[in-house]
Image (cartoon, rainbow, N blue to C red; front, side):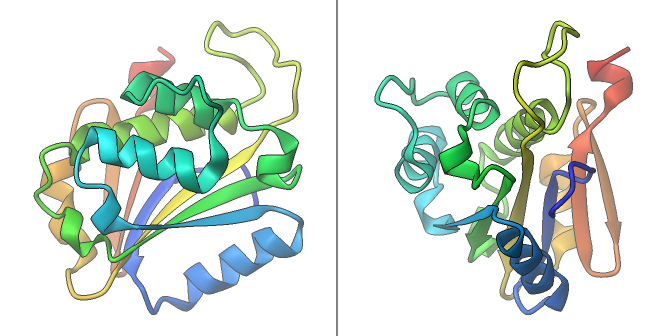
Length: 176
C-alpha cells in the first residue's frame, strides 16, 4: 500500500494482518488512511457524497463517477500527507450484488491508475509527483471470491487467491 504498484483495489477479510500492516506502513511514511462504512456507499450519489465528506473534496465536486475519478486523481499534498492514501471500506459485505459495484470498482481502478503513474491520460509527464493510492474492502462474513462475478469486466483484471480478490485496470485495454 505504500508503493505505486497494482493491485489498486483489494477485497479481503477484515481481520487480515496484511491490511493492518500495510496501512500502518503507509501512515508511518506520512500517508493518510481514510475510512468509509460500506453502508454509506449504496449508490453512485451516496458513494460520491461519502468520499467527498471523508477525503474533503472541493465544493465544485460534481457527485458523479467522472468527478470522483478526477478528484481522486487530483489529491493535494495535505490530503495525502505528501505520500499517498489508502481508502479503507469497512463492512464491504453489504456491497455484494450492488447494482453499481462494477462501475464503482472500475472507477476506483481508473483513479488509482492515474494517480499512481508519472504521466497524465494524454501521455504527457505530470507536473506533480506520483500519489500512491489504494482501496481496501474489508469483509466480515462474505468470502472475497463471491465479489468476482459482480466485478468482472473487460476493462479490469480480477484475480482471486489466498482469500483475497484484487482488481486493477487491464492496461492492454486502457493503454494499448
